[in-house]
Image (cartoon, rainbow, N blue to C red):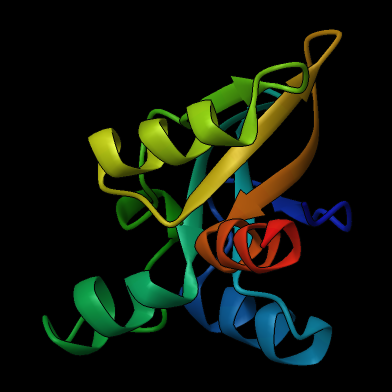
Length: 118
């Protein structure tokens, strides 16, 4: 699980998001509405939703981010996380502990865990 989290306001531009991802070497950013994480934008969104549909990088993240934010509790198993990711067709899953997001599990995290267990 990645614990380094970045979140932005829904009015942040896609250009600003791309800079944050590049500078931070990260693949996702949480989107907060009224201070509460409610969505996510990922590096894949840039390929599928932005580049392929020729969306301007001056658009706000609110128009592209995925809502609602899909989460899992920190005490749930890695298998449950994998099932949820497959069911929802997502590659990044927010982890909640005490009603706060504490990290993001990625599909790469799942593969790495599988390799370590075998």
